[in-house]
Length: 199
Image 1: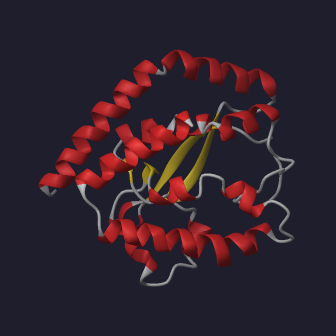
Image 2: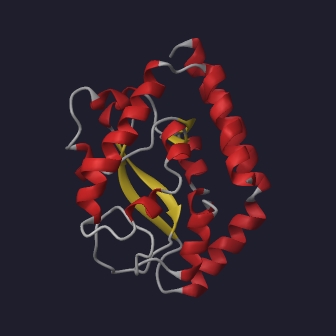
Image 3: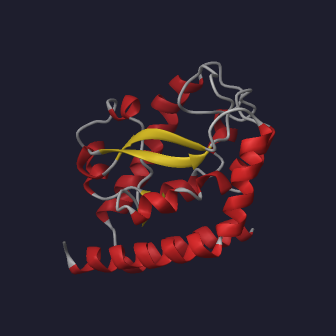
């Protein structure tokens, strides 16, 4: 592990643990609301591809109805999304459990967004370079495409639009991040994320 990666890991543990403690009351409320608002588990677990192609279970608060068929990617107005889920998604509250993924070392605070295996199989050899670093809770792609569901709303084939239009554009940003990755840049992305949430 490089010195920079060691600093990242220390920051990941310290900040994610602090946020989990600080946000524990809110997370408890969200868990209760998810539980009573619709049948199903509180947490949504989905296989994603992480560092060096290793799979892990990404955690989110469940924002969709159980048993709804459809693509892994969602568009605005998707009927599978519950009213509570729509609210959580708007404020990115459904992603708070991912700090547990960070504590476990499966993710970092900053990095490329982890993708599902079914979509990773479409990566080109160049795009596979995004798997050379840990995926992140936030990052350049997450900021630029934080309203991704709006971009996909109304598409006749949401999955086709995502795989052939949105995903390549996101991967181009992730490759830019990976190739120019610095500690200072990571802290800058954390600051931009906080500012975006406040706005």
